[in-house]
Image (cartoon, rainbow, N blue to C red; front, side):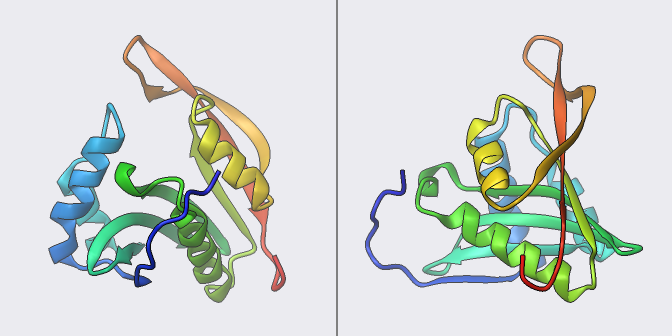
Length: 158
């Protein structure tokens, strides 16, 4: 359920080096096994499509997209825990899909934990389908957790 929030100015823009501290902070507060600051820095340096969702001048979410050979891979997409359930994840995903289409991507992939029901519901709503599973892909508090590999064929109208 999307909760109403006071009007805020929302924009999605290219991630900058000065955003990395905020992005890393959101990542640490969102995951038990977060990406390091260095991984985000390396994604910027590698030329991945790194974007942030800006809410009233504050980084409220981010995504990392790798594009190559007509395919794309969403490596990370996250909304600050304090701004979840406001539709920002869907808005960010829509922007990532738009950027993938603009790069002439034909198919887009991602991995998600099966325990992340909110993310799974969003990806299903946006037309992603279950492609396969990757056993023991994610580190977990007790052992490892599988990953669901999801995919979506991209056309001009989806």
